[in-house]
Length: 274
Image (cartoon, rainbow, N blue to C red; front, top):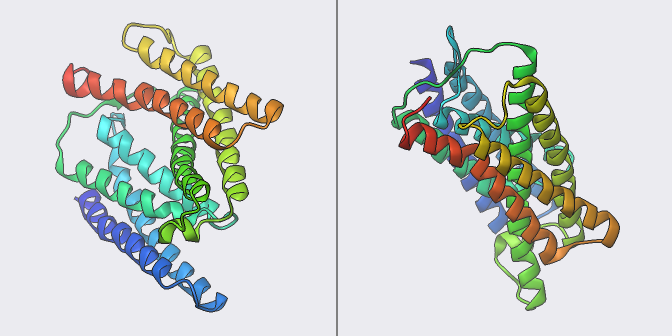
């Protein structure tokens, strides 16, 4: 009951945060820094409220029989983590514009969680190795998901600059291209470390990472790890940037998305296995 209540309250808060952010972008130019800063604080305050309400709604995932990590439950948890990471990072980095994508996406996923019934998928292993593996996995996916969104914005910004096109409101409000690329690789670096921890804890503490129901997830996760490893090496060794960095980022995230949620959706929704 309380989960539905808090989730229903978080939905309009996420939408309101996105709408206020978009409206502030439209009126940002020609305003004083003080006024622009006040609008940013207002937007982030609404978004923080939405994230807090979303977190309260997620308490329903913790049942007496174990952690309910069903497909939409896991997806809702990741959506909350992504929103929370963006909000925390926005305190130090010019990353808050990602909220125009992140907040509506979180609202849609939360709506699906509230409306679509699904069988619980309980994780009954409460040991610290399992907790570390799950935490590292969802954090890695969240950071690399944000990196993928950042890569899409970077691609749009790069396209506009190459064609000397002014772009829309969002593009004009983004930080310089060099800053956007630096943020992209910071996100990838954090996600890569967490993905490494996820794979290491999985191989050390799970019984068989190549069991029939885990093999595709493991292979795709390793493939994603290799893609991001090559990308980071190319950045350090050869200064990879621009379109190369964007393509490798999106390719690595696609592999990770299929590993984490593509396989989970097939197992739970198509094959009916929990």
